[in-house]
Image (cartoon, rainbow, N blue to C red; front, side):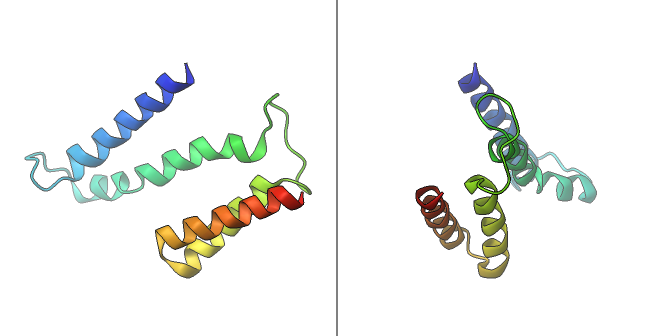
Length: 104
């Protein structure tokens, strides 16, 4: 079931990004809708990541003091604002996360 949900969300996201933002497609949307569609990927990513960060496998809230996912998410946000390079911030965030998992 979860694979079908992931594939479905991927298809919807790709459809939104390609069909409405591709210049070769003849559909023309108002400017404010095009600006809203540019935020589709970060919004969808946030919806997927929030349960992973704050809840464990049983559905209860993870404790904040030793939650490596929370600290890594905060670090990823800060480093992406500072570096402004997607690949480098991704690598730095993953290294930070695995170090936290090892230490906690």
